[in-house]
Structure formats: C-alpha cells, structure tokens
Length: 353
Image (cartoon, one colour):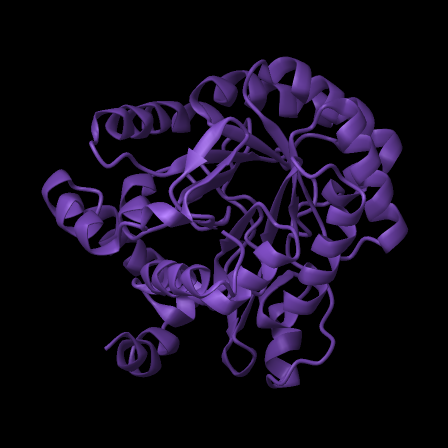
C-alpha cells in the first residue's frame, strides 16, 4: 500500500509538503488510545534492548535528527517502534531556514538532498513539548523512546560567537533531554563545519559538557572529514569527557549518483543522505571504533535501509543505529520491520545482541 501511495501520489508532490502530510499522521499516533494499539503492534522484543549512556533503549534503532525538528511527534515516532528519537536540530534563536524548495528526492539513488538550514521554532519553544513527552513516557507502562536533542548554531550568530549560542541552547535543553548532540557538521549553515577544526571544537565541547551537567553530551561529525581528522576528533572527544560520537551527517559529495544530473544540479549544495552515503558512513564507524574505548557510545547513521544494514553497523562496533532517508521510501512500518528482522538475526546468531 505504501509503495503505491509513494509512487503515484507522494513522489509527485513537493518533498517538503509530502513530509508535512506524513508528519500529521505520525502525530496522530501519539494520541493515547491509538498509541496503545500501535505499541502492541510495533513494540520491540526485549532481546533488542541496549543499555548505554546510563539509559535503556528498547531497540538499537532510532530516528535521526532532522525528521522531528521541533519535538512535536516524539510519542508517535516511539509508537512506530523507534527506540530513540533525536529531535532537532534546535537553535537558541528561532529561524525559518533557507528558502524553498530545499528538499529534493533522488529516487533512483534512494537518496535525498536537503538544504533546510535548521528551520525550527527555537530551543525555548521546545521545552514544554520535551517535558510532556518525558512525562508521558514515565506514565506509560511500556515506556517510550529515549529522547535525544540535537543542537546547532543560530544562523544569525557569527561563528566566533558560537560558544555562547550553543551554551544558551544547552542551558535550556539539557534539563529536558536524555542526551544532547552537538551538531557541528551540517553543510547548510554557513561556517558551521569550520567548528570541527580542533582549535574551535575543543573550547566549544568543553563549555557544553560543563553546562550540560549530568546530561550526556555527544558530537555529530561529517563524513567529509579526512580519516586523520576523524581520529583526532575522537581523541579530543574522549579526553574531554564526551560520551559518544554520531557518525555521520550528510555529505557534500555527489560521486556515483544515478539520478538525472540536471536534477542533482538544481538541488544545489545541500547535504546528500541515503543509500549513496552508506559505504563512507560504515568506514567512518570502523575508524572511530578502532580508536575509542569499547564502552564509548557510537551512533551510526547514513545509508541505513534494512535490518541487515543495522546488523552490519552493530557488528562493526556501533552501539546504536539511526535512520532517516529510507523512512521516506519505506513508509510507516519501517522501524517495526527492522526490529522484527533484527530480532530474527540475533536469534540465528547473525547479528550482535
């Protein structure tokens, strides 16, 4: 049914409008009565549970930042079977993002190019919704998803003033987040990726860790960094007490795409996600795991489509795995199918429990 709907309806709509329509349905799934029924159908089996960051994740598979930008669909996404929901990217100041169109499907590549630009209503506006989501989870007998909050730099703030901007988001959001993810790797905010330079990254992460208190802090990096730079970022993260790394964000590379070159060119210089990113994301994961302690949390994201992909990331050293782009192509039962297939793999001994 979803394949039919996507092929003949959703794929012919503006990608951002289609996302908004799907989002309405997911928010409806957050209603208590509907949610109870959905959880019965989608709830991960206990063998999939993962403990890390001092938290229990019902499944290693979660939804990456960018899907629920303003923390408005946490319960609905949890009711679809995602073990965690990383909301955002949230910025200290509300912002509308880049001009439309800014989201483009590359269907032959099962990929997406986005240049959204951190469109969100601001950190402060998200606090009541995050608070309610955590309260609902506490009341729910079957629990709910772990809630990560991804924070980025406000567009109007100069890169030289980025630390203060991130600290404002940290002070507001750390008390209502299960973990914080420091996004220094989106290609859609001018100057942001420069914060991955070690001389800028060190004071930024030092300040965020201090301000976050007991809330675990992770950092999200780009796939376009050199292997040597990735190793240095890992060494810095471990030394500063960062609890984990999320690898990777979207890429600026356009190598090997099967889609119409004119469509790719029209999408501009946004970040590419989906299947073309899979190989590099897996390579980065292996590099990070080779130079970090075994209990260091690694969240692998980029090109994840099937339970086989999730199992491959877990076998390569990932603690948790995230997806996003394949959700657009697979539909609302995607997380349920991955959880069911992954549980079968674990029973057969072909994936790491």
